[in-house]
Length: 311
Image (cartoon, rainbow, N blue to C red; front, top):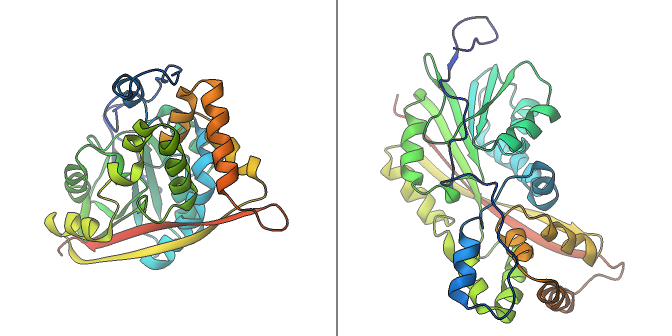
């Protein structure tokens, strides 16, 4: 049993183990794949670790910097009451956690993630007595006596095997009248730097199309998110999109984050042999039209969803 800032019984947490989310340890890495392998064999190898989110530093370079900008817009939209007690489900490297701490004036924040590497990264990057970091997945969330006032989840729901179960689990840990909210990337249409990557990868290797987050994550649509929250029994459900600029100072700045091995696209690149990587890099360079100063200016869109627990 942890204690809140006032020293009263606060957050209960029973296990400090890896709880698997989306269903297994993220530490595995796909073996190198040569162009001669069949699509079936390559997919079997890749699917074991394609949603690999194990390395905090690599995630920061690939996605975390964009996540932080969306987190600010998301919190502006929520406009939460001050001095609330927050639970964050899937804190990753702490993008949303830091935004909550800086912009929402919370009484306390409990941020959890099933990846020990991510929790360690977030904890080391944010020394704040009002924030507690825990290793926990959506199947074993911490509880707070009298319930949390606000529960949020950023860029996580689509990676869960049963997002409806996760939403119900969050609702069990929130007080009556509390706010539950989340956001995900619009992989199908709104993530230009990924959309271009997967289009060119599939042009060279048709099996790559089956790894594309767009078709793999049908939850990442406004209507699907609204349905998820309404079916869970939340009231006053609303959805909104958030668009940010994703500017890369050069092509190398665009390409190098794909070499970090963390996330679906980088895991795919890591599975390719050197020649296949070279071909993909060449196609992307030809596809992306830089500005006069050599920079590449794209946009990324996230989809937010919020609802209230019945009072």
